[in-house]
Image (tube, rainbow, N blue to C red; front, side, top):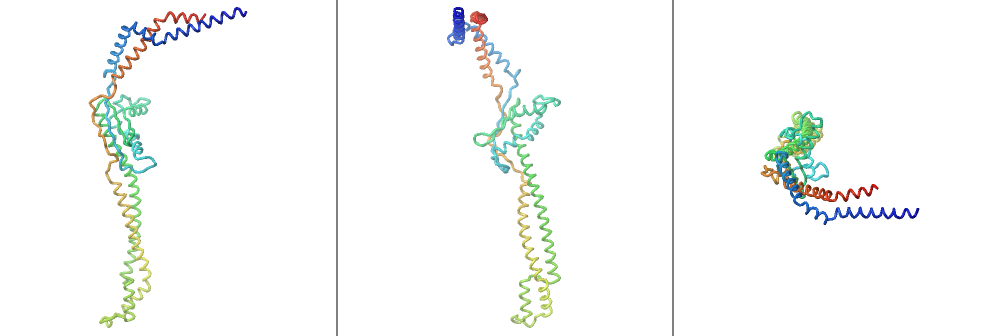
Length: 347
């Protein structure tokens, strides 16, 4: 039995070596060059036909050419919302659904992208095509590049410009809404403060008209001089004693009240002035018409298509065809050896 097994083992080893030799020869660079040279005219003809077909099928009849318009902007007047930079915050605005919906409505993109309104995945497909043709990214210099592609170069330029315009409007609206809320709050505080001022003013008016207390410190001093008859000069004989006594009584009864309301009046005036400054600041921000981007590169209609790049399509098609054809001719030249190898493996 040992005698029978040894030859069999040797035979299997020989088959394996032969198979490896055939495979190594099949993929040997010299073999490839030799076969390619042998079939050079056929390969050249096939490669040329593939290149011509690539030129034909990459034309506008089969692939709609697209033109690219680019704008570069820097953020400005952006309020702080989080730890993100102003550039990152502006990116969020530019990629928002509101701007996309505005572009879809303004340029009728559903029709341009040939998407039926009743299509089941209308919104998903529309969003896919939009972000396929509109790309917003941050540059290495913290600017933002807006890139729009469309079959019409003028539309591509108008879309890029409109994205900036709509972005300014939506940020202005949101900021204005925030400041209008502050404006309403400041207005209510001013009304309450004005009500307090009017109330104090009415008390002071009553003290002035009914009790004659106009300037408590100076009147107190003069009443004391008149009451004590310490007035110098000719006026010492013309003192109206009855009025002095009356004013003295009023000051004694209402003097403290006058001081309280008078001090409160000036405190309220100071507080009102502070609130008025805040109100004016909120009013200015709520009604200001500003932009939130400095345009570094303004978009313009391109005179050269950006897609497709036909020479790349032709080169890839020609090279791929040449490589595939070379493998096919090598297989055809070695078909018998490969079939024999397969038969030996099955035995």
